[in-house]
Length: 76
Length: 344
Ligand code: SF4
Image 1 (cartoon, chains in turn blue, orange):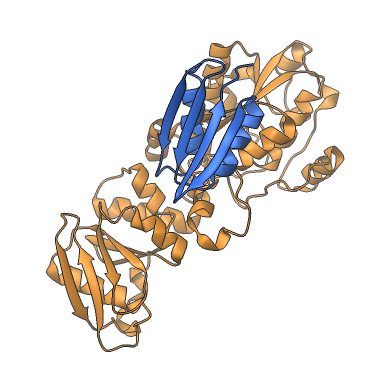
Image 2 (image 1 turned 90 degrees about the vertical axis):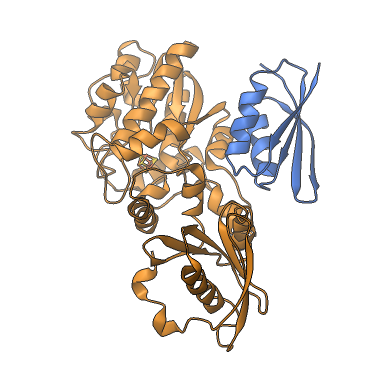
């Protein structure tokens, strides 16, 4: 299990979701990915994408103007 | 079990078409293409006044409602060629719908080949859209995309010749529909039958290119630059603010509210920008080239859209794209001098 980060700042939805998807596809089950965004829409869209595709959202948080979503990969 | 991929736009038709096929016991996954012009997301993300409405991505919502996976594919770069050189031309505005559909189905065909799926589903309905969904153009989509009879349109399949999915017995003809034309009642009835509520119903089309004002701004951009081309930043900025072209070689993008001003702020270092400091006012970006006279005119227009519009003098802070800063004291441009034809 390894920890990864994805900088999706300044991208507007659905780009943060697309970047998350493409990154997750490179990772192994159990890996953790932390996505940092500035579009607050990502707070809804990335968890929705995770629910659909079976990945687990470990944490969502807002810090200053940034939105952070932490995901655990689960390729089913 | 047969496997199909469904083109999910986020609208009602693809939601229904997918469900019809799922009911036949086919394994379905969704695919959604991002061209950069999609109505989804952006404007809601930008404009503050939409903040009260929970923002959602409709394609993701459809996939979640159906309980299927969704693959979102970025086709921004490849789409440029479709929009700039559509073999079948444009619709009422700058929408190259027929070429666009052919391209998306072609990408879906590539995807099913790579992933070992059997056929492709779309929510198309004969006669529903003036360009891409006509009786004579629907076979063109199947043929030119290379999908041929791997393309299934469950909402109107009863009006069309049988395709592979039917012949192989993966899906029964009786289970499909015979919708046609622009009447939306059958779709709404089917949605009610499935208990789908709260679905999106975008007017016109799935992208900004069907919008007359957006198309005008795009054509204006090409004319001003003397070439038909665009970058992602251009197409994003066309969605935001008031666009005013007082001279052929530059235009101004004037934020209309706080959300737009914040969004434009992200571009303030790449473009020449203007902002009133003596009075509250919008952030203005200048796209193009401007000499000192042009900058002065831009400052007067900026003042015109500020709360100092009736003041004698307004102070405008200007910052050129090369970093050069200048403070100007100007008289706001009177309404009579702000020509109607400057509005793009
Ligand atoms: S409305 Fe836009 S996205 Fe939809 S088919 Fe036409 S060009 Fe393509």
